Amino acid sequence: MKKKVLFVDDEEMVLEGLRRMLRPQHEEWEMEFVESGVKALELMGHRPFDVIVSDMRMPGMSGVQLLTHIKTERPDSIRILLTGHRDMDTAIDAVNRAEIFRFLTKPVVPENLLPALESAFEQRRLLSAERESLELQLQHAQKMSLIGQCAASAVHEFRNTLYVIQACTDMALDGTCSETGTVSALQNVRHAVGHCTDLTRRMLTFSRRTDEIRLAELEINEWLNQLKSLIGPLVGKRYSLRCVCAPEVNSIHADAGMLSQVVFNLAMNARDAMPEGGTLTLQVDLHELNAEQVPPRLVARAGRFVCLSVADTGCGMDRTTLEKIFQPFFTTKATGTGTGLGLAVVAQIVERHEGWIDVTSELGNGTTFRIFLPAHAVNAAGNNAIRTNLV
Image (cartoon, rainbow, N blue to C red; front, side, top):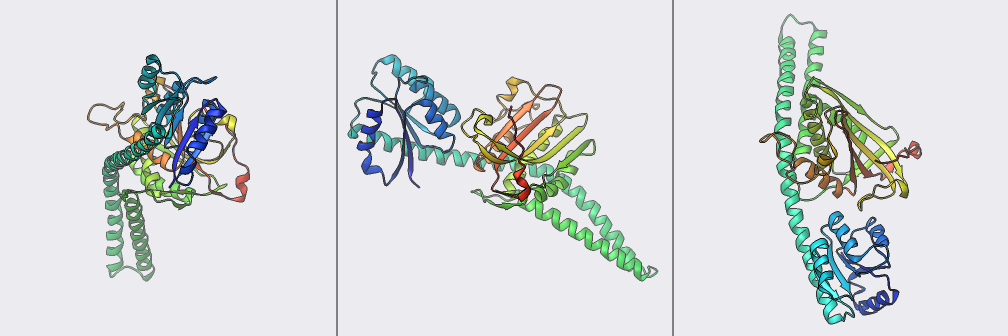
């Protein structure tokens, strides 16, 4: 895979000089050159870059403002400031606000630029390896917590099913049972065994541990209905569980185990937000977003997306809480009852599916998580995609 670097400078002559200087690296590097911070952010909305090299003083958005924004939205991209202003205040501002990796001054020569870029690429590789390791640890820790809850529910399901099998077997072995009664009893046993087999298969799919995402075609409506049968007993009888599918949506490319972990986590959070009971809604929709409807973040983009939403009628969250919910180890639950890993893991899994999450919530009026995933395949009816405005 080629190394990706983005150069940002409002002077075309500077960009042309960089093109000429880096021409020998053309086969190994993927390079882009843009004239403003706005264009840089727009380009990064469509694809990530390993390294960003930005000028300092540019119309509309300075280099420090651009790199600070990238630090927030794409913290794994390595940031370098290339400027003709060598004053100490510029350097301090760049280091403190944008946390730049290198500070280079113009005119830059290959002997200075190339080693800086190579060091930046190596730093990006190390950060990626460290982040991937931490993500896998977070996902596994949070999944183990969910599996514990699922196991308690599964034991109850198996106990009830074994009771049916035992009762029907006794009936079939009873010498006084008619032939019709015996056949009916054996059919009930077959159905019960099939239910246990299906429940076991779904739990094994969910609990599978893997070091990489395995994207495959997933019939999302069928998958959601199957997931509902696992979530229902887990949330309890005090809650009304609704599942709204979308006939116009055929399939998506997803890792079924990872996506199940996302929905399980959101469903458990919804349950905890409704201590007195309420309604939990799982829904699938097809959305088509144009450039004006895309939320202001780098991972969001225009196009056609399958929206998987998890909504509750619980206590809701205030704005301050909403701003922190995806931070690792942040939790609103009582000490000892929440790890603070769940939503951080959810965000990581969705990002690995090339999607993003929107959250709307209001104190006393519940919360809705909407997960946008690329719609790789839809039925013919999918032409009637919902055109939506995002909050």
